[in-house]
Length: 419
Image (cartoon, rainbow, N blue to C red; front, side, top):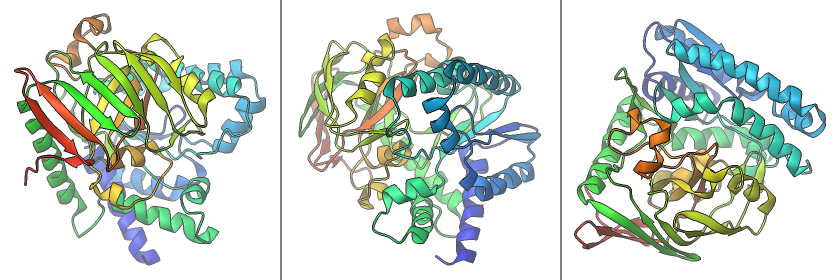
């Protein structure tokens, strides 16, 4: 891809963020970056394109939260963590004020997969959790779709070095940009129209699943024999959502999944991850969980087990699942056959589960009070961590309300085609 072509595609990508990802409305605030997902130095050029596209769309004010991963690593390793926590609380006040004024939110997660290698694990947990805690109330409203938000990728050198070690150093960021744009379907003359069709296709699949009236799913694959019950009133959906004001947005670009919430106490068996998980700059490989009545009662990993412990033991809710998502191995991202060490991309190449916080995907869920979640089978936690379990060897069967067995996945792909 020539430089001129890349620049044009980046402008289309920025437009995609504003017009599809956020569906930014005239007179609306836009926040780019928040919490640990600050805008990194290598994102300056692209973020300027997003700012330009936002103001062209009529944005009232664009707030960019600039940050630096090197600073974060060194501060967690050597700085005063109480001051870091106080800073996070102060930042959260500004984020929440803009949320009250109807802001939309864009983040560009691009964490160095090896960011915290060599840093004391307890300090990493304390530092990152203080930021998560400061944004807890904000993230509750975000996961409840009370305002438009989206996640998109943009490369950094450290991330590109991890993904493309076989390439000369100067070729790695351009290579990662090409793959990011391909994953985001920034192809052809009208990517926005292409996205609208893509979203329709995903909703067609979720409607098919909803029509089956599923009571439970049985996952079988290497190291996996897991049964997941669904709560009463559940529904499957795709990443296209609506705010209470009726603004349609797409929470992830890319997105290839359809997903729902499991019944909190209805998960039993064993599951093993099929791809590494990059969590807060630590790589977790060979993750295994065992469930009884929904709760994780045993866990382990081939590497990164301390980081896994910090996920599972974060709070009581982090011992349960909050999301199940289906992605075929024939998805465009999976076909790239490349590990991105970034959940936004790896989860859209693979079926996955999430430890922790649920999305309120039950009838009337968006208006449920948190104290009512438990009674509706929904899980609440400070964590929401996706891990990948898909492979060409994964089979999934549904048991419907009348006891019928329906094949959902065979050898990693949909058992029933809809086209």
